[in-house]
Length: 126
Image 1: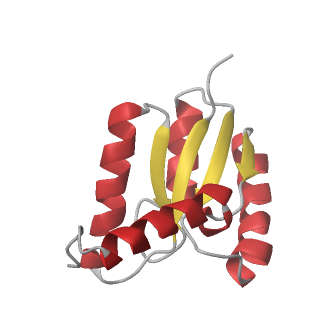
Image 2: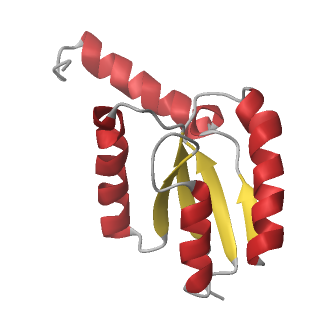
């Protein structure tokens, strides 16, 4: 059985500089994992719709959507589930909406590591 595609989903912004860190993250992750894509909720491309159409055209049947958000607001509780249901019906694949990255148990550990490094001045703040 093929590994599911992971779609990283960021919010989106009109500011083109805003998406640079997300693109960098995607490049780093996709260098190690071939089934990782990056999509944006709004205002930025590629959209979730575009990515779903692209992976479906490659024969992918299951995607996990990982929101790059700290917590669940209205978009993640209401808007995104409705969009995902619509995309599943249109494209004939399963989209599994995961909790946002900020609610993952490993996220608190990452933040603890980052804070410890900042306190010890081992990491320069940009």
